[in-house]
Structures are given as structure tokens and as C-alpha cells.
Length: 239
Image 1 (cartoon, rainbow, N blue to C red):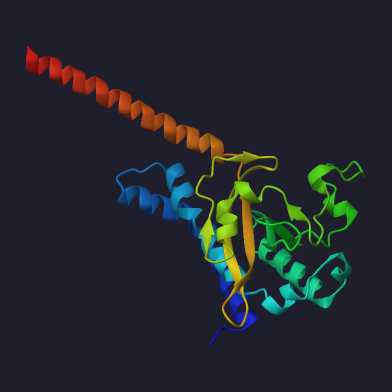
Image 2: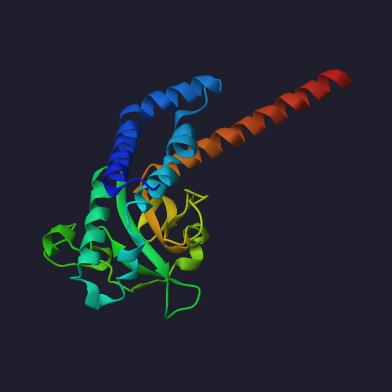
């Protein structure tokens, strides 16, 4: 049987806390196991993949019946919408590194596109949304609306795949209009087991691109040094 909402929330909270408290130890242990593997590489390839686990656990906390009950802007004050956004806010609060937690589904009005069902900040006040404190909401400071089309759907195949299975973006070095992020996705399933929506979690990390560049620079340096040594060895053998 599926565990109740209280059990699922407790597990999610403990998972997020464990990752925060032990991330450095996990990184060091993996580095030692691999023979001094770069810590930055471990953070990207090992620790950050926990986003899939967080997304999968979080998806279990959102009742499919609530998602199905949110059909348009007119449902903004409905118990289903308020409960869903409140849960998304709670999931975000349980992991400070998450900046967006949201639910999307197939758009009914736009083929091959996804639409917004709910996002963690959709019940926030103007003051809470006003990141720069100038009293005017601009650009991304505006909260999404129910049914809003996610125009960049085609750029995130893993997001669409999240309607059917737990997954994550394969390339963390992509920079979009919102900056750099690592994202995990997992389906919200109805009683028949069908994926009717996808829950996504975004972790913003301004160091992601820098870290990838460092890893790639180290790789290129290694290739160059290996080539030089190979040529030197070839010259020694031929002489």
C-alpha cells in the first residue's frame, strides 16, 4: 500500500536533511574511492542526482485528484490549488537549495507543449515576489498562472519524459533566461497508474558552469599531456 501523506513528507524531509548534512562526507568518500576524484565532479554527477529522488518522493505528496481539479485561472482559490501550492512551498522549504518546485501537464490548447498547473510561489504576495524590492514586478518576478504555456518545452525533453518516468536534465551546463539550474522530474500518477502530470524541482547553482569548465579544462589538459608523453615515448623507441 502507498504510505500516507504524513509518512511521505517525513521521508522527504529526512532525505533533504541527510543530503545537506552529509554532502561533504559523501563527496570525500567518493573521491577516495575513485582515487582523488574531483570534488566538484562528484557534486555534479553524484550528489546532484539526488534531485531525481527528491522529485520522486515529492510527486507522491501531490494527489492526482487535486491536479485534475485544477483546470484554469478560475480555480486559483479552490482547495485543490491552495493545497497543491502549499505542498510545493513545503517541499521547497525542506531543501534550501531548491528555488522552484512546480507541476506541469500536457497542454490542452497547444500540441506538444506543457502548461503550468501550480508553482511554489503562486500564492506569494507582491512583496514576496518583488526580488529587487523596487515595488514593481518585472519579468520572472511575476508568478506563473494556471494554464500558462511553457514555451521552452521543446528545449527540455527530460521534462516531458518526466510525465512517464523519474528523470533529470542530462546537461547541467545549459544556461537559459533564468540562469543555470539542475532539475529533477517525476510523474504524478492517478489511481490507474497513469502519469497525468510531472513534478519538477530546480536547483539553481551559479557555480555549475564554472565547475563544468574546470572539469573540461582538466580533461583537455590530461589529453594534451598524454599526447606529449606518447610522442616522447615514440621518439625514444625510434631512436
